[in-house]
Image (cartoon, rainbow, N blue to C red; front, side):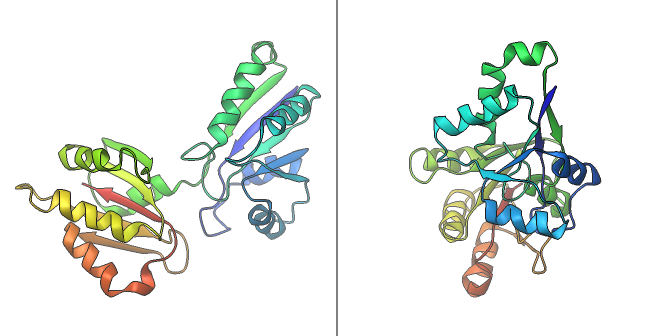
Length: 233
């Protein structure tokens, strides 16, 4: 039997990895990485020496076929992303889909097992320390650059649910400008919470009205770096 393991890895602090994840990584025949250089830091930190190959959004069909062929040979393969859980705003979901479609018989007969090794996620980490209602929320992943972007901001403004999405340092100011534009005039004011550098030394949570949060980052330009989780509640 071969196993395809989808493994959650640290979003910042390299200590944030489960004992099970380390065990599965060490026992793998191959580890698929979003960026092999990033994953090497994690493997070296925990003295794991296993061959790695890249798998990311630009990977070709031939790479997918190569992976499927190795699974059919009985190899144990693990999939990790640069940070967090593969498949969440990540191309890993497409690889899992292809494996499930191309190896239906092997899965049904027990020759192949696809398993989740749960671990860190920026989404749940941010919600856990934001102190806002999150029993019912909508996750939007990364917002589109152009097409559909304006429509999403209108949806965020109209929603009664907590809305969560990821943003890059290159776009966070424009995103906050859009939130001010769409949210500020509402009679029932919404709260914006921005979490950055989660689990790292400079982890920070900034919360307030859309205008207050934007003013903070306009004033503290040195804080416009790292990855951001934005929560509108």
